[in-house]
Image 1 (cartoon, rainbow, N blue to C red):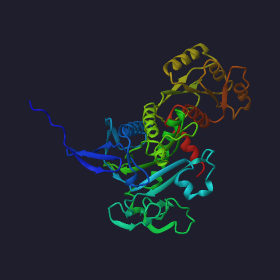
Image 2 (cartoon, rainbow, N blue to C red):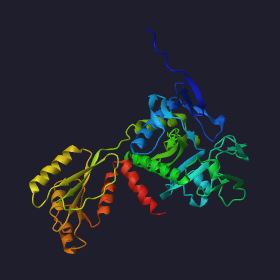
Image 3 (tube, rainbow, N blue to C red):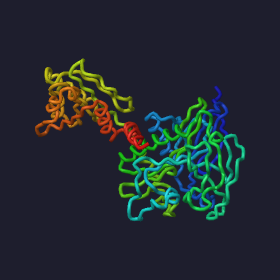
Image 4 (cartoon, rainbow, N blue to C red):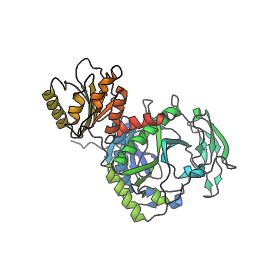
Length: 442
Protein backbone atom coordinates (compact mmCIF):
# COMPACT_ATOMS: atom_id res chain seq x y z
CA UNK A 1 0.00 0.00 0.00
CA UNK A 2 1.50 3.32 -1.08
CA UNK A 3 2.22 5.87 1.61
CA UNK A 4 -0.04 8.88 1.64
CA UNK A 5 1.99 11.92 0.70
CA UNK A 6 1.99 14.89 3.04
CA UNK A 7 0.25 17.95 1.59
CA UNK A 8 2.70 20.13 -0.30
CA UNK A 9 3.22 23.54 1.22
CA UNK A 10 3.76 26.85 -0.48
CA UNK A 11 4.78 30.19 0.96
CA UNK A 12 1.76 32.47 1.13
CA UNK A 13 3.48 35.46 2.74
CA UNK A 14 6.70 36.26 4.55
CA UNK A 15 7.46 38.99 7.02
CA UNK A 16 10.32 40.06 9.24
CA UNK A 17 9.53 37.61 12.06
CA UNK A 18 7.32 34.92 10.52
CA UNK A 19 6.55 32.95 7.38
CA UNK A 20 3.00 31.94 6.46
CA UNK A 21 2.51 28.71 4.55
CA UNK A 22 -0.61 27.18 3.07
CA UNK A 23 -1.49 23.92 1.35
CA UNK A 24 -3.32 23.58 -1.93
CA UNK A 25 -5.89 21.23 -0.42
CA UNK A 26 -7.23 24.01 1.83
CA UNK A 27 -6.40 27.57 0.82
CA UNK A 28 -8.46 29.01 3.69
CA UNK A 29 -5.96 27.95 6.36
CA UNK A 30 -2.48 29.34 6.95
CA UNK A 31 0.40 27.93 8.96
CA UNK A 32 2.28 30.67 10.80
CA UNK A 33 5.91 29.78 11.50
CA UNK A 34 7.83 32.12 13.79
CA UNK A 35 11.45 32.99 13.02
CA UNK A 36 14.32 33.58 15.41
CA UNK A 37 14.71 37.13 14.04
CA UNK A 38 14.28 40.05 16.43
CA UNK A 39 13.81 43.50 14.90
CA UNK A 40 13.61 47.14 15.92
CA UNK A 41 13.03 50.62 14.51
CA UNK A 42 11.76 49.20 11.20
CA UNK A 43 15.42 49.04 10.21
CA UNK A 44 16.61 45.75 8.62
CA UNK A 45 20.20 46.63 9.52
CA UNK A 46 19.32 46.31 13.21
CA UNK A 47 17.78 42.83 12.94
CA UNK A 48 19.49 40.12 15.01
CA UNK A 49 19.05 36.37 15.45
CA UNK A 50 17.86 35.32 18.91
CA UNK A 51 18.20 31.55 18.99
CA UNK A 52 15.04 29.95 20.36
CA UNK A 53 12.86 33.03 19.84
CA UNK A 54 10.67 31.33 17.21
CA UNK A 55 9.60 28.59 19.62
CA UNK A 56 9.14 31.01 22.52
CA UNK A 57 7.08 33.39 20.38
CA UNK A 58 4.89 30.54 19.14
CA UNK A 59 4.28 29.22 22.66
CA UNK A 60 3.31 32.70 23.82
CA UNK A 61 1.00 33.33 20.86
CA UNK A 62 -0.75 29.97 21.18
CA UNK A 63 -1.33 30.35 24.92
CA UNK A 64 -2.61 33.89 24.45
CA UNK A 65 -5.04 32.93 21.69
CA UNK A 66 -6.26 29.86 23.59
CA UNK A 67 -7.11 32.12 26.52
CA UNK A 68 -8.82 34.94 24.64
CA UNK A 69 -10.80 32.40 22.60
CA UNK A 70 -11.99 30.72 25.79
CA UNK A 71 -13.04 34.13 27.08
CA UNK A 72 -15.40 34.43 24.11
CA UNK A 73 -13.46 36.80 21.86
CA UNK A 74 -13.40 36.13 18.09
CA UNK A 75 -10.04 34.87 16.80
CA UNK A 76 -8.65 33.45 13.56
CA UNK A 77 -6.35 31.11 15.52
CA UNK A 78 -7.08 27.39 15.13
CA UNK A 79 -4.40 25.54 17.09
CA UNK A 80 -0.74 24.78 17.69
CA UNK A 81 0.78 22.49 15.06
CA UNK A 82 4.52 22.49 15.88
CA UNK A 83 6.96 24.05 18.33
CA UNK A 84 7.35 27.08 16.07
CA UNK A 85 4.05 26.97 14.21
CA UNK A 86 0.29 27.35 14.61
CA UNK A 87 -2.61 27.18 12.18
CA UNK A 88 -5.04 30.02 11.57
CA UNK A 89 -7.81 31.05 9.25
CA UNK A 90 -6.41 33.23 6.50
CA UNK A 91 -8.10 36.60 6.73
CA UNK A 92 -8.41 39.82 4.83
CA UNK A 93 -6.19 41.80 7.16
CA UNK A 94 -7.29 45.32 8.04
CA UNK A 95 -4.51 47.85 7.40
CA UNK A 96 -4.57 49.13 10.95
CA UNK A 97 -2.34 48.58 13.94
CA UNK A 98 -4.37 48.83 17.12
CA UNK A 99 -2.57 49.99 20.26
CA UNK A 100 -4.14 49.78 23.71
CA UNK A 101 -2.35 51.36 26.67
CA UNK A 102 -2.86 51.08 30.42
CA UNK A 103 0.24 53.14 31.22
CA UNK A 104 1.50 56.20 29.39
CA UNK A 105 4.81 55.13 27.81
CA UNK A 106 6.55 54.88 24.44
CA UNK A 107 5.42 56.98 21.49
CA UNK A 108 2.46 58.21 23.54
CA UNK A 109 4.85 60.39 25.55
CA UNK A 110 6.37 61.77 22.37
CA UNK A 111 2.91 62.83 21.21
CA UNK A 112 1.95 64.03 24.71
CA UNK A 113 5.20 65.14 26.40
CA UNK A 114 3.18 66.81 29.16
CA UNK A 115 2.62 63.31 30.62
CA UNK A 116 6.31 62.48 30.91
CA UNK A 117 7.36 61.37 34.38
CA UNK A 118 10.69 61.12 36.23
CA UNK A 119 12.51 57.91 35.35
CA UNK A 120 12.58 56.80 38.99
CA UNK A 121 8.77 56.85 39.18
CA UNK A 122 6.27 54.40 37.65
CA UNK A 123 4.57 55.51 34.41
CA UNK A 124 1.19 57.19 34.80
CA UNK A 125 -1.78 54.82 34.76
CA UNK A 126 -4.95 55.50 32.77
CA UNK A 127 -8.17 54.53 34.52
CA UNK A 128 -9.73 54.11 31.09
CA UNK A 129 -7.59 52.29 28.55
CA UNK A 130 -6.14 54.48 25.80
CA UNK A 131 -7.18 53.34 22.30
CA UNK A 132 -5.01 54.35 19.34
CA UNK A 133 -4.96 53.53 15.64
CA UNK A 134 -2.01 53.63 13.27
CA UNK A 135 -2.32 53.12 9.53
CA UNK A 136 -0.15 50.22 8.39
CA UNK A 137 2.16 51.16 5.53
CA UNK A 138 5.17 49.62 3.83
CA UNK A 139 8.23 51.68 2.88
CA UNK A 140 6.19 54.86 3.18
CA UNK A 141 3.50 53.84 0.72
CA UNK A 142 -0.08 54.49 1.82
CA UNK A 143 -2.38 51.99 0.12
CA UNK A 144 -6.09 51.30 0.39
CA UNK A 145 -7.61 47.88 1.06
CA UNK A 146 -7.59 47.11 -2.67
CA UNK A 147 -3.83 47.72 -2.99
CA UNK A 148 -4.12 51.06 -4.79
CA UNK A 149 -1.48 53.67 -3.94
CA UNK A 150 -3.11 56.61 -2.15
CA UNK A 151 -0.08 58.65 -1.08
CA UNK A 152 3.59 58.44 -0.16
CA UNK A 153 4.92 59.43 3.24
CA UNK A 154 7.95 61.70 3.70
CA UNK A 155 11.44 60.60 4.73
CA UNK A 156 12.00 60.24 8.47
CA UNK A 157 15.17 62.30 9.03
CA UNK A 158 16.12 60.30 12.14
CA UNK A 159 16.28 57.04 10.18
CA UNK A 160 16.85 58.37 6.66
CA UNK A 161 14.08 55.98 5.64
CA UNK A 162 10.46 56.59 4.59
CA UNK A 163 8.13 57.17 7.51
CA UNK A 164 5.80 54.25 8.24
CA UNK A 165 2.64 53.62 10.25
CA UNK A 166 1.35 57.20 10.70
CA UNK A 167 -0.91 58.06 13.62
CA UNK A 168 -4.65 58.50 12.97
CA UNK A 169 -5.43 61.44 15.20
CA UNK A 170 -9.24 60.99 15.20
CA UNK A 171 -10.30 57.40 14.44
CA UNK A 172 -13.98 58.30 14.92
CA UNK A 173 -13.91 60.71 11.96
CA UNK A 174 -14.93 59.61 8.48
CA UNK A 175 -11.86 61.26 6.97
CA UNK A 176 -8.65 60.27 8.77
CA UNK A 177 -5.92 62.88 9.07
CA UNK A 178 -2.48 61.28 9.27
CA UNK A 179 0.13 62.59 11.71
CA UNK A 180 3.74 61.85 12.59
CA UNK A 181 3.53 59.03 15.16
CA UNK A 182 6.24 60.52 17.39
CA UNK A 183 5.50 64.25 17.35
CA UNK A 184 3.02 66.32 19.38
CA UNK A 185 0.02 67.18 17.23
CA UNK A 186 0.53 70.90 17.86
CA UNK A 187 4.11 70.87 16.59
CA UNK A 188 4.71 72.41 13.19
CA UNK A 189 4.76 69.73 10.52
CA UNK A 190 3.15 67.06 12.72
CA UNK A 191 0.16 66.98 10.40
CA UNK A 192 1.41 65.14 7.33
CA UNK A 193 -1.20 66.81 5.15
CA UNK A 194 -2.42 63.39 3.98
CA UNK A 195 -5.95 62.10 4.51
CA UNK A 196 -7.59 58.74 3.97
CA UNK A 197 -11.31 58.06 4.10
CA UNK A 198 -12.27 55.27 6.48
CA UNK A 199 -14.09 53.25 3.81
CA UNK A 200 -10.81 52.98 1.87
CA UNK A 201 -9.36 50.94 4.75
CA UNK A 202 -12.30 49.34 6.57
CA UNK A 203 -14.07 46.37 4.94
CA UNK A 204 -17.86 46.71 4.53
CA UNK A 205 -19.70 46.38 7.83
CA UNK A 206 -16.60 46.95 9.97
CA UNK A 207 -16.62 49.98 12.24
CA UNK A 208 -13.94 51.58 14.36
CA UNK A 209 -16.28 51.20 17.34
CA UNK A 210 -16.34 47.41 16.94
CA UNK A 211 -12.56 47.26 16.47
CA UNK A 212 -12.18 49.32 19.64
CA UNK A 213 -14.54 47.12 21.66
CA UNK A 214 -12.82 43.86 20.70
CA UNK A 215 -9.36 45.35 21.25
CA UNK A 216 -10.21 46.76 24.67
CA UNK A 217 -11.71 43.45 25.79
CA UNK A 218 -8.69 41.53 24.51
CA UNK A 219 -6.35 43.75 26.52
CA UNK A 220 -8.45 43.35 29.66
CA UNK A 221 -8.32 39.56 29.41
CA UNK A 222 -4.53 39.61 29.14
CA UNK A 223 -4.15 42.31 31.78
CA UNK A 224 -6.01 40.07 34.21
CA UNK A 225 -4.06 36.95 33.23
CA UNK A 226 -0.74 38.69 33.76
CA UNK A 227 -1.86 40.35 37.00
CA UNK A 228 -2.82 36.94 38.42
CA UNK A 229 0.83 35.92 37.91
CA UNK A 230 2.18 39.13 39.44
CA UNK A 231 3.01 41.04 36.24
CA UNK A 232 1.87 44.30 34.64
CA UNK A 233 0.68 44.54 31.05
CA UNK A 234 1.65 48.09 30.11
CA UNK A 235 0.38 48.21 26.52
CA UNK A 236 0.00 46.04 23.44
CA UNK A 237 -0.50 46.17 19.70
CA UNK A 238 -2.72 43.79 17.74
CA UNK A 239 -4.14 43.34 14.27
CA UNK A 240 -7.60 42.29 13.17
CA UNK A 241 -9.00 40.80 10.00
CA UNK A 242 -12.09 39.46 8.30
CA UNK A 243 -12.36 35.68 7.98
CA UNK A 244 -14.11 33.74 5.21
CA UNK A 245 -17.40 33.97 7.12
CA UNK A 246 -17.21 37.76 7.16
CA UNK A 247 -16.48 37.91 10.89
CA UNK A 248 -14.20 40.50 12.46
CA UNK A 249 -11.52 38.54 14.34
CA UNK A 250 -8.27 39.07 16.22
CA UNK A 251 -5.59 37.71 13.94
CA UNK A 252 -1.85 37.50 13.22
CA UNK A 253 0.24 36.93 16.39
CA UNK A 254 0.34 38.21 19.97
CA UNK A 255 3.71 37.45 21.52
CA UNK A 256 6.53 39.10 23.47
CA UNK A 257 7.12 41.46 20.53
CA UNK A 258 3.54 42.71 20.82
CA UNK A 259 3.52 44.33 24.26
CA UNK A 260 5.39 45.97 27.07
CA UNK A 261 5.35 43.68 30.08
CA UNK A 262 6.85 44.45 33.48
CA UNK A 263 7.15 42.67 36.79
CA UNK A 264 5.95 43.96 40.17
CA UNK A 265 9.11 46.10 40.45
CA UNK A 266 8.61 47.61 36.98
CA UNK A 267 11.43 45.61 35.38
CA UNK A 268 10.88 45.08 31.64
CA UNK A 269 10.53 41.58 30.15
CA UNK A 270 9.45 42.31 26.58
CA UNK A 271 11.04 43.27 23.27
CA UNK A 272 11.53 46.73 24.75
CA UNK A 273 14.78 45.35 26.19
CA UNK A 274 16.08 44.88 22.64
CA UNK A 275 14.94 48.37 21.64
CA UNK A 276 16.88 49.66 24.65
CA UNK A 277 20.04 47.78 23.55
CA UNK A 278 20.13 45.40 26.51
CA UNK A 279 22.38 42.32 26.37
CA UNK A 280 21.14 39.43 24.22
CA UNK A 281 21.52 36.86 27.02
CA UNK A 282 19.09 38.81 29.20
CA UNK A 283 16.67 39.24 26.31
CA UNK A 284 16.73 35.50 25.56
CA UNK A 285 16.17 34.67 29.24
CA UNK A 286 13.12 36.92 29.40
CA UNK A 287 11.60 35.63 26.15
CA UNK A 288 11.88 32.08 27.49
CA UNK A 289 10.48 33.16 30.85
CA UNK A 290 7.48 34.91 29.31
CA UNK A 291 6.69 31.85 27.17
CA UNK A 292 6.83 29.60 30.24
CA UNK A 293 4.64 31.97 32.26
CA UNK A 294 1.91 31.92 29.61
CA UNK A 295 1.65 28.15 30.15
CA UNK A 296 -0.04 29.11 33.43
CA UNK A 297 -2.77 31.23 31.85
CA UNK A 298 -6.00 29.74 33.14
CA UNK A 299 -9.63 30.31 33.98
CA UNK A 300 -10.51 28.73 37.32
CA UNK A 301 -13.83 26.94 37.57
CA UNK A 302 -15.76 28.84 40.23
CA UNK A 303 -19.30 28.99 41.56
CA UNK A 304 -21.63 31.93 41.88
CA UNK A 305 -24.26 30.58 44.25
CA UNK A 306 -27.64 32.30 44.17
CA UNK A 307 -29.29 31.06 47.34
CA UNK A 308 -32.97 31.77 47.92
CA UNK A 309 -35.04 30.93 50.94
CA UNK A 310 -38.15 30.09 48.93
CA UNK A 311 -39.58 29.92 45.42
CA UNK A 312 -41.26 33.28 46.03
CA UNK A 313 -37.93 35.13 46.17
CA UNK A 314 -36.97 36.93 42.92
CA UNK A 315 -34.56 35.31 40.47
CA UNK A 316 -31.40 37.31 39.87
CA UNK A 317 -30.07 37.77 36.34
CA UNK A 318 -26.46 36.61 36.10
CA UNK A 319 -24.53 36.94 32.81
CA UNK A 320 -22.97 33.86 31.24
CA UNK A 321 -19.23 34.05 31.82
CA UNK A 322 -16.75 31.27 30.99
CA UNK A 323 -15.50 29.50 34.10
CA UNK A 324 -18.36 30.63 36.33
CA UNK A 325 -21.13 28.18 37.13
CA UNK A 326 -24.34 29.71 38.44
CA UNK A 327 -25.57 27.39 41.18
CA UNK A 328 -29.19 27.95 42.20
CA UNK A 329 -30.23 26.76 45.65
CA UNK A 330 -33.58 27.02 47.42
CA UNK A 331 -33.21 26.08 51.10
CA UNK A 332 -34.47 28.14 54.03
CA UNK A 333 -31.92 29.06 56.67
CA UNK A 334 -34.65 29.44 59.27
CA UNK A 335 -36.74 26.36 58.54
CA UNK A 336 -34.10 23.89 57.35
CA UNK A 337 -30.75 24.86 58.89
CA UNK A 338 -29.32 21.33 58.77
CA UNK A 339 -30.21 20.93 55.10
CA UNK A 340 -28.70 24.34 54.37
CA UNK A 341 -25.38 23.37 55.97
CA UNK A 342 -25.30 20.06 54.09
CA UNK A 343 -25.96 21.85 50.80
CA UNK A 344 -23.21 24.38 51.53
CA UNK A 345 -20.67 21.59 52.13
CA UNK A 346 -21.63 19.88 48.87
CA UNK A 347 -21.07 23.07 46.90
CA UNK A 348 -17.72 23.81 48.54
CA UNK A 349 -16.65 20.23 47.83
CA UNK A 350 -17.58 20.57 44.14
CA UNK A 351 -15.65 23.81 43.56
CA UNK A 352 -12.04 23.74 44.78
CA UNK A 353 -11.53 26.97 42.82
CA UNK A 354 -13.89 28.68 45.25
CA UNK A 355 -16.88 30.91 44.73
CA UNK A 356 -19.21 33.56 46.08
CA UNK A 357 -22.64 33.15 47.68
CA UNK A 358 -25.47 35.64 47.21
CA UNK A 359 -28.15 35.04 49.83
CA UNK A 360 -31.50 36.50 48.71
CA UNK A 361 -33.43 37.11 51.88
CA UNK A 362 -36.59 38.91 52.91
CA UNK A 363 -37.90 39.71 56.36
CA UNK A 364 -35.54 38.37 59.05
CA UNK A 365 -32.21 37.22 57.58
CA UNK A 366 -31.19 33.94 59.13
CA UNK A 367 -29.65 32.49 55.97
CA UNK A 368 -26.87 34.99 55.21
CA UNK A 369 -25.32 35.24 58.69
CA UNK A 370 -25.52 31.48 59.24
CA UNK A 371 -23.81 30.67 55.94
CA UNK A 372 -21.16 33.38 56.35
CA UNK A 373 -20.16 31.90 59.71
CA UNK A 374 -19.61 28.47 58.13
CA UNK A 375 -17.46 29.27 55.08
CA UNK A 376 -14.60 31.51 54.03
CA UNK A 377 -16.30 32.09 50.68
CA UNK A 378 -17.45 35.71 50.44
CA UNK A 379 -21.15 35.98 51.22
CA UNK A 380 -23.37 38.83 50.09
CA UNK A 381 -26.85 39.18 51.54
CA UNK A 382 -29.36 40.84 49.23
CA UNK A 383 -32.05 42.32 51.49
CA UNK A 384 -34.98 42.02 49.11
CA UNK A 385 -37.55 43.46 51.52
CA UNK A 386 -35.34 46.28 52.80
CA UNK A 387 -36.83 49.02 50.65
CA UNK A 388 -40.39 48.28 51.72
CA UNK A 389 -39.56 47.36 55.32
CA UNK A 390 -36.33 49.14 56.37
CA UNK A 391 -36.34 47.45 59.77
CA UNK A 392 -35.60 44.12 58.02
CA UNK A 393 -32.10 45.36 57.17
CA UNK A 394 -30.94 45.18 60.80
CA UNK A 395 -30.96 41.38 60.69
CA UNK A 396 -28.38 41.59 57.90
CA UNK A 397 -26.05 44.25 59.30
CA UNK A 398 -25.86 43.79 63.11
CA UNK A 399 -23.52 40.80 63.20
CA UNK A 400 -21.51 39.21 66.01
CA UNK A 401 -17.80 38.52 65.57
CA UNK A 402 -16.69 35.93 63.00
CA UNK A 403 -19.83 36.50 60.92
CA UNK A 404 -18.57 38.53 57.90
CA UNK A 405 -21.97 38.97 56.25
CA UNK A 406 -21.96 41.72 53.61
CA UNK A 407 -25.26 43.37 52.70
CA UNK A 408 -26.65 45.19 49.66
CA UNK A 409 -30.14 46.40 48.79
CA UNK A 410 -29.91 46.09 45.03
CA UNK A 411 -29.77 42.74 43.23
CA UNK A 412 -27.73 44.09 40.31
CA UNK A 413 -25.09 45.39 42.71
CA UNK A 414 -25.02 42.02 44.45
CA UNK A 415 -24.19 40.31 41.15
CA UNK A 416 -21.62 42.97 40.22
CA UNK A 417 -19.90 42.63 43.60
CA UNK A 418 -19.82 38.85 43.26
CA UNK A 419 -18.29 39.08 39.78
CA UNK A 420 -15.70 41.58 41.03
CA UNK A 421 -14.59 38.99 43.57
CA UNK A 422 -14.58 36.10 41.09
CA UNK A 423 -12.63 38.25 38.61
CA UNK A 424 -9.52 37.88 40.79
CA UNK A 425 -9.17 34.37 39.33
CA UNK A 426 -11.12 34.74 36.10
CA UNK A 427 -9.89 36.89 33.17
CA UNK A 428 -13.29 36.63 31.46
CA UNK A 429 -15.07 38.01 34.53
CA UNK A 430 -12.45 40.74 34.84
CA UNK A 431 -13.00 41.67 31.20
CA UNK A 432 -16.76 41.81 31.71
CA UNK A 433 -16.64 43.98 34.83
CA UNK A 434 -13.71 46.25 33.97
CA UNK A 435 -15.09 46.97 30.49
CA UNK A 436 -18.38 48.06 32.08
CA UNK A 437 -16.55 50.16 34.68
CA UNK A 438 -14.44 51.98 32.09
CA UNK A 439 -17.47 52.67 29.90
CA UNK A 440 -18.83 54.85 32.71
CA UNK A 441 -16.26 57.48 31.74
CA UNK A 442 -17.62 57.85 28.20
